[in-house]
Length: 79
Image 1 (cartoon, rainbow, N blue to C red):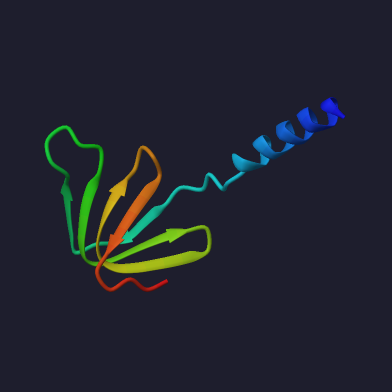
Image 2 (cartoon, rainbow, N blue to C red; image 1 turned 45 degrees about the vertical axis):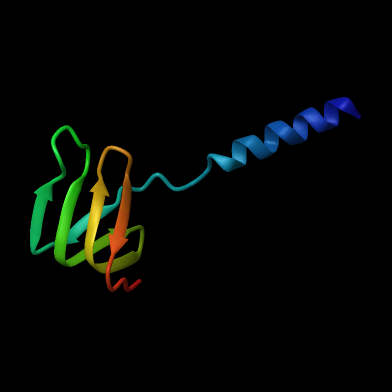
């Protein structure tokens, strides 16, 4: 019984990290500015649109963390 529990824990921990590693692609931005000094993100504003897999995300502004492959959208967000 103890071995079955260990196998189940191992199986579920492997599936947690199975998220898609596709890059977030910036399609459009009226203005693109690097964040504050020593930051690792870009501030995108004005008609911003991103693509991730087959999903298009549009918003008024966003912070795009390219190293971490993350994006935070602000304003009028449309998916």
